[in-house]
Image (cartoon, rainbow, N blue to C red; front, side, top):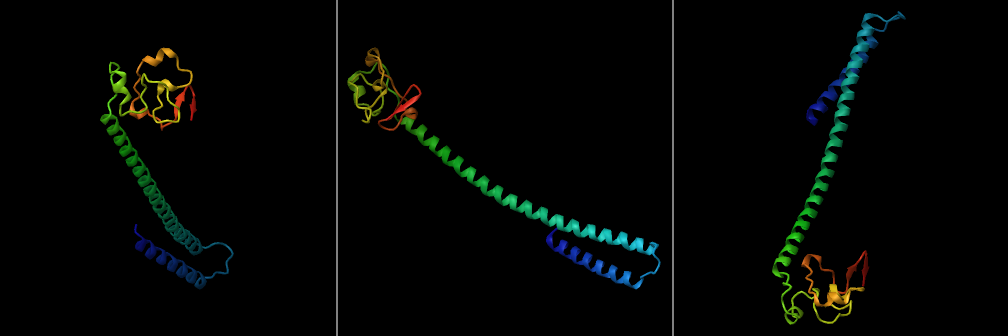
Length: 172
């Protein structure tokens, strides 16, 4: 039922209540017991009031439904935007990972030191943790046996320059 029909029905019900009050006034009885006519008036009045309450309830339900729909629509669009940004970010990171493939372990230390991956481990001397050449082999507590082993860090796992993770602690 649309709003125009509800308004028309509500106006009709209000007019019926006014008409019912006028008829009751015309047939005012002095008899204290309820006559059939008074019982009929009471039943009609209850039916009209139930109709009016139904119209009010329907309006409240429509307002709540529309408010929820607007809030849901806003929330859904926010979620869709953040998901789209996340997908674009994942695509960008995967594109970066494909452009800079990890070096094989058989490459020489001179070619690995000129690598485009400044955070990959090399056989060169340890660098300052704050430098962009910091690598896995520069971690505190690294054993000397790992110095000759080249470890490639996938681009997706790279940390910002000067940061690395050791055990469960992050050092700067």
